[in-house]
Image (tube, rainbow, N blue to C red; front, top):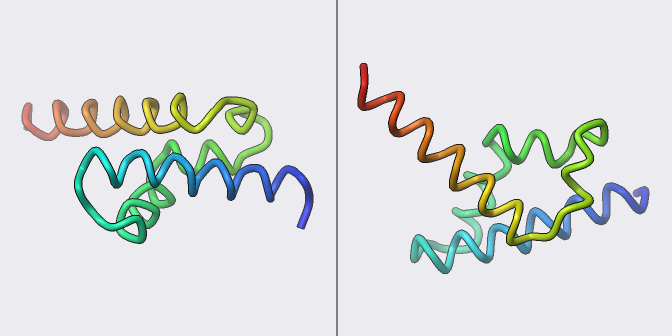
Amino acid sequence: MSKYEYTMELLAAMASINIAREKKISRTKAFSRFIRSETGKMLFDESTDMWMNGPDYIADEYRREMKAKKRKHNKI
C-alpha cells in the first residue's frame, strides 16, 4: 500500500466517524455510505488532491453532496 492509499483510507475513516456522530448511525454504515458517494470516489482519485484536505473538510464535502442530491430528488 502506498503512502497515498494509506492517507486516503485514514481520511475516509476519520470523515466517516464525523458523519456517524452527526447522523447517529454506526461507523460501519457511515463508512459504507461515504465510500459509495462521489466524495468518496474523489478522495481515492489522486488527481483531485482531495486527500490533501483534513477529515472535517472531506465530511463537509460529503454533506454538501448529500444536500444537493436531496434537493435534486425533491424537485423531481
